Image (tube, rainbow, N blue to C red):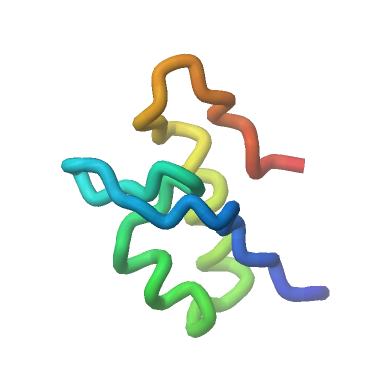
Length: 64
């Protein structure tokens, strides 16, 4: 199985809740991404569908 790619879209600024405006990950998730297993990365990506700090954003952006 290939590695799950980093969902970064180069909009690396966090909101007041600590979620990145670009990828919706927390600061910790962004910092530790390279050390996570594929299972951990998949779980984070699945959780991203429930997060949104931009009204009207497509919460399924990272599911393919």
